[in-house]
Amino acid sequence: MKKYTIGNLHEQLGASATKRNSAHMLPVSDWLSDLPENTQLTDLIEVQFKQTRKGYFHNSQHLALEKGVKVVVEATTGQDLGEVVLTGKLVELQMKKNKIDTSRYEVRNVMRIATEEDLNRAAQAHAREQETMIKARQLAKSLGLEMKIGDVEYQGDGTKAIFYYIADGRVDFRQLIKVYAETFRIRVEMKQIGARQEAGRIGGTGPCGRELCCSTWMINFSSVGTGAARIQNISPNPQKLAGMCAKLKCCLNYEVPVYEDASKHLPSRNTQLETKDATWFLFSTDPLAGKVTYSSDQHMAANLQTISVHRAHEIIAMNSRGEKPAALDSTEVQAAIGYETGHGDVTRFDRKKKHYHSNKR
Image: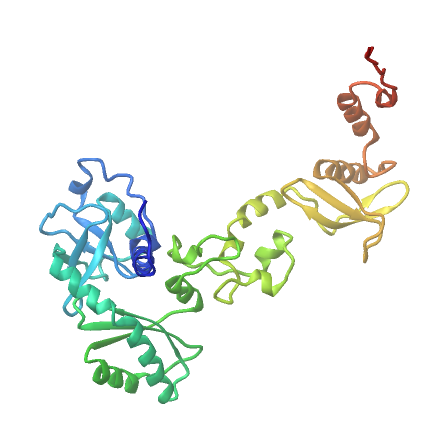
């Protein structure tokens, strides 16, 4: 059995963190990769860099590239190093899905498969990111700028760095760029991100016990409103509805289409049900179960009765014909259910059991 010490445990954790922060942050299933003609359809490939940043490149040299291969690609200035996550026809579909206009988007070329020297140079550059981020925050604060440096990403050759920042309003960081360039001796690019993007770059574990969706598979962020909680009958508790980014959880949107489809069959909230003994008002709904609860009082819960959506529509149809049922629930339906599920007299449970006594000698 392999013995673990504090040192190699840190190495294992560091390796797993580095692995998680690479292409595993946004996993892609390249289900066409085993088809021989896949790479012949197009020379485009998708390359992922640190965490959620991706780019599209031409494999103009027709290198033998497949998912997981580290490559050196052309950058705006210099070279960058990333990991191939998609090849062939699916790259074109991915670009179409992300609404990337090839006439405006400059598709650069893959230079070579990364060598050991390239990997070492990139590792040395990435090792400076944490220290650079802390220093960058101090410099921004000293200039009195209302912004927060959320992350720093060095280019593969170490000559350029992207500073991801969060700000509520517009920030004039022209002086800050000069200070950064003089302090770190690199080319500087500033990129504004939101709270959701910051949570995706940092990562973490959600209240569900799984890694955050924004740091594992989500690419685009859709707006989330409180209406998504209301349609699912979720309690409007800000502490429970907010995610790690302090915004509404993205997962609130996941089941909304199902609830919207199920809600189409619900009776209108303004429609009252008339019975011979009372007038009933819609109190609450359970779209997925197909149940609705009615109250005999319009403003408070009184004499609540839950019936099926089908039964509610039956009563609405009867009321439109000028008829009123005796009660909300159908006695005929109850009798039928009792007949189907009764399976005999319930008093059979009251019968005394015979006791058998063994003859002991």
